[in-house]
Length: 77
Image (cartoon, rainbow, N blue to C red; front, side, top):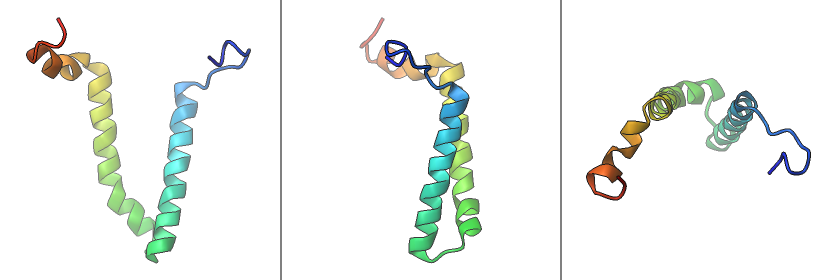
């Protein structure tokens, strides 16, 4: 759709950078509201973020994992 208007679609790297910037902003607001040290909050959230990134990589690299349950239930061939 961006190409239809003559714009350049953002690359995957740009999207990752934007997501990381948003996460940092959310963590900063959360740390302020909770009156918690920012870096302590980052260290607390980091294992969950790493686990999500690993899961995302598995789903991207092995699409069969994503399609196993629908195939088992007969929803797709």
